Image (cartoon, rainbow, N blue to C red; front, side, top):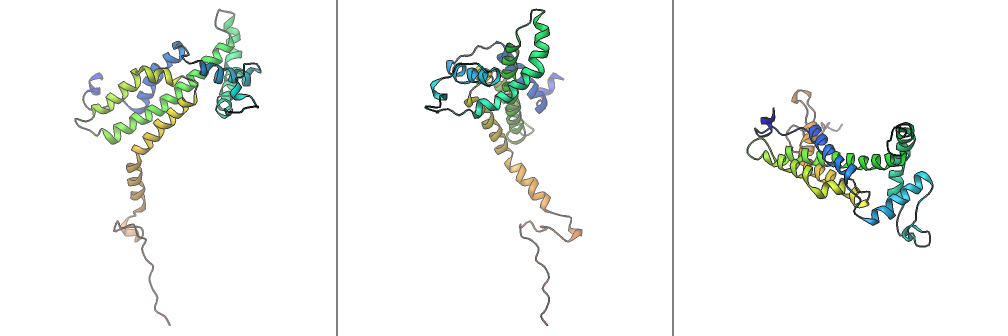
Length: 220
């Protein structure tokens, strides 16, 4: 029940992912684009990659070539799939009923894909905090505080759906932080797998980490 939240049982990683998707999904649908750099340096080149038309800033010009197309092409693959398999087949039919044009569907589906990546990365971070930094007991509310802050932070809601390389760096930072927090547990599991049952006579039985030496045969 709801009381379990305050009795030391935090939400699961899957529940945290759903909560983050719900909160940040609203941002993807309703939050405006706050930076003109996002529009002209990323959405316009993405439109060019998907539809063949779009403005080009001087940073992408072959004369200067200050920006790489790698980040845009990575998302262009998703946008092409959204266009041909979802937006145009479904959006074209629904447009007759007053729904937005298929291009608008591609825009929102791309933003929601950014939100999904953000939710998965931050849910992993929350799960690592719950397991490693907030063990059962009075410190358990730390995990709940982290989840609440991840859900209601205005900065995270707006940045999670921003089509910017810094947003991609934010995902990787959350995922790397989660992996770092789980590093001691991972090492303990690896050490446990090295040990075998003493009856087998193999493995690291004394915990020293040294491999057992083979028997020495006398010469001659």
